[in-house]
Image (cartoon, rainbow, N blue to C red):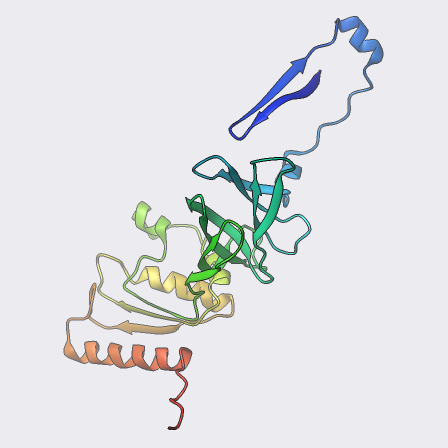
Length: 253
């Protein structure tokens, strides 16, 4: 069997499959069959990861890690010959993961730091960026996280959906991914989001070496009803943000 590329347009790749004249002739001329490659070989850092055409179909954007330490974003101009290709984003400390065309002239993309301690594909610290299709006018729309505050929040989707305490310990990878300082607060009487959500995440973070700042209010539910706890929580958040998001003092006049 032979594959031959007969034509190419921005939206269509035409491939012709040519069969040999006969089974007997093919058996005499074809080399001995080789063992197929394992399926995982096609997913280990592929040269091209994701491809998207611009709205007009004149440009092709794709992510690739070929020749780079991290995955970058490239745009190919399909008009004219030869086709020209240029980098939109090639970051030294993060991979480009999701990207979308805003119009024919601009893209938005996310930058992801992959967690080196995780065997699976988990990531931390996303940042949202915008750039022109030629790589100019780079703008950071959302910064990477420096710290986080989470209270009475769902931390374990399996626990929420199954409605059971008997769920597997699957938050270990998540605990390794969250490296920025985190403050967590729950009420021990919360029926909507039980404190078990926070406790399971706290344990995972602690085992990973990133223990959060933990608050558990006795007698509180899904929110703080007593003024004492409201004031205490506000003060703790203020101190946490002041420690992790320091502001430079104003310059002397």
